[in-house]
Structures are given as structure tokens and as C-alpha cells.
Length: 449
Image 1: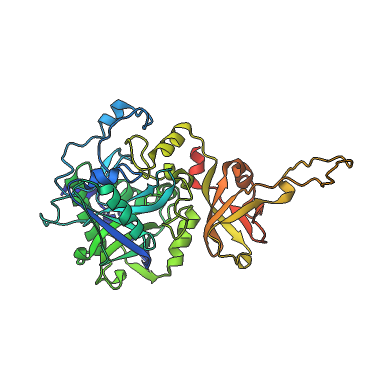
Image 2 (image 1 turned 90 degrees about the horizontal axis):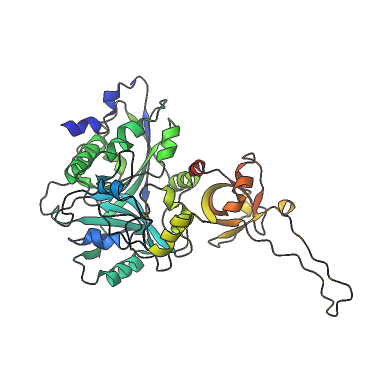
């Protein structure tokens, strides 16, 4: 099969097998719930609710798009009826242009004012199947924090109207976080063996065949237990520059899968893998170190804009040209103007034991000796006898979430130069009212600005 040449079969790269071992770290996620959306109108229905472009065409409206190039978009329209088959997910941009995929896509759901209700992963489901009945209509799983799934289900039902879709909870699923690290190479092998090839599938048939090859390469003999798979794409640029960075995955399995490592059978790798079960905090810290959040366990619903969480730097997380979707107006205007005063950045915290408050967000202040304030003097003859007061110092940002000494914070862009041009161990910021220091880390996407 021609497709096999672009699948993850590292044995064909001639990598050394002497004493080289991969390392699989895994953990079960305990706070995820899923909604299943199925029916011929599913792509169109979800396209009006998610920030990602879900269907391979668009309706251009000059007031609600950023005037995309017509000629370029013509090449991204795939000729098939997306209502008649479980065809996958459309991805707008990649190494190889637009493509069809059966792997999960990171996206967001906004309220009418453009604030992020929650992020989500949109999975075509099942990942692969030869059952014609199962594959008859587009079917998707959407992953949410368990605390918000009921709210989202009600929201979807409100917007359903006459759409030909069925929306229900999928409670018989288990999800797992995986980190698969390969022996270091000058060029990270995940880029050339997985990330790049996965973007070459231009038809639903190619996408399905690639997914079948990949699940067999990792889970041979247990393919029927793998319902959906998310390949972490937010870290693409990190893998491109770091030859030993691990590839993160999220796997959704049937409820009878008690331990994902027991079905992990990586025949596509040229060497054995050590296996280590870790706590969920390992993956949370890994995300924070890269500057990402994961569901409403990390942020308050309807408190942030998607672009403040860097959705515009995440592959296919937000579309600039697909037309109307819930909360689209403010997002499109911000994309068009490029004006954004706050963004999410990774941070390291010092003296975390002093952070005892249970507040969701904590104000971050710039150290007072670096703040230039002017005080106005009042004449001693003032009839009111009121002493002048110092102007209130505006917070430099907010600590959104943290795990141990790693976290993510919304930082005002006016402080970026000060924050990132200093030695990484120099503490210039602190949590208001505490001795907890905050050291921002320059995010990988900042080089693009």
C-alpha cells in the first residue's frame, strides 16, 4: 500500500536499535466527559459553534471575515458530500496545505460576547471502522471537563433547531494522556514520521487508511479498543527545534480498557519502550511548561478571549475566514486589527508554599522599585486637609493556574520586553500580597511576532 510509506514506521529510517529504548509515560484522565454529535448536519452544526473551521468550504461575508485570498481558498475545497459519510475533520493549514484527518482537533466554544466558555477536542469517531452502518453519517466526540458538560449539552440543544443531528452524552469511554519519547536525534523523528505525513491525507479515504495504519503501529491486536486519538499539534514548533522532545497524545478507549499500557504494542518502532505510569500532574506541568491550558479546570469559563490564550498561534484552533459562528465578531475584529493587550505565557513560581489562597486567579504585580509613579502634591492650605494618595498600581497580569512551581499567566504585552529580556532567574514580578515570585518564560510563538 502506498499510504504505508508515509505512516509511522520508524524501522524504515534505519535508526539504531542497540540499547536504544523509547519511553512511554501514561496517565488516566479522571475529569473528562464526552458529547456525541451524529447526523448529516453535524459538520455544519458544529461549524457554527466552534472556533475551528469544520467544513471544507466557507461563505464569504465581507463584514465577518478577513477578506481571504479567493484564489488560494479555491485550492482548499474538497469535492465530496460531507453529509453522507463519517469522513473526518477538515484542517485548514499545515505543512502540506489543507487536509482531511481522523485525529482530534483542538478548538474553542465562545459565548455571544466572544469570551471562551471552554476549549474542547473535536474527535471524528470512531477513529477507524469498516462498518458501513457506523460510517454512514458524520459522527463526532467532543471532550469537556466533567464540570461543564451538562451546560454545553444544553447550549447545543438550544442551537440545534431543525438541524439533523443527535446529541447525547457518551459515558462509556476512558481517556488517557500519553507521552512517547524516542532516543534523541538531530532532527526530531516525530516531525518527519508522524506530524508531516499526517497532513498529506487529502481525501476521507486516505485519512481513514492513515488512521488505521497508525493505530496498528501503536496498538496492534487491540485496535477495536481505540475509539479516538488526539495528536498534540500545539507543540509542533517545539518538536521542530528539539530533537528529544516527546510527542504528546490523548487516547480515548472503550470502558473495558483498564490500563492503556497493556494494549500498547508499538510494532512501528524499531526498539522496545520502557513504560512508566505517572500522575496527571506530570502532563499538567508539561502543558504549563509549553504555555497551554486544558479545559475549565485551568481557567474560569467566560473570563478570557480565545486569542488571549494564543488560539491564533495554535494550528487550526481558530478560523479567520469561515464566516459566522457564535462569538465570532470580536474574534474576527481582533484578528483583523492585531491589537491584543494580554496573552498567556508560561511562568515559573518561587516560594509557592506561601500561595495559600484558593482564588482561581491571582493578580501579578511588577516589583515596586521598577514602577515609576508620580504623586501630586496638595497645598497645605487645602480646605479639605486630605493627604495626596499614590495612584493605584495596575496589575501586570494574572496567574491563571499552576501545578507545583510551573504555571500559566495572562501577562500584559507592554511588559513582554521587560519580562523576557532579563535572566531567567531574575524575579521582577510577584503575586499581589504574597512573597511568591513570578518568572515569565518567553513562549515559543513570540519569535513570530
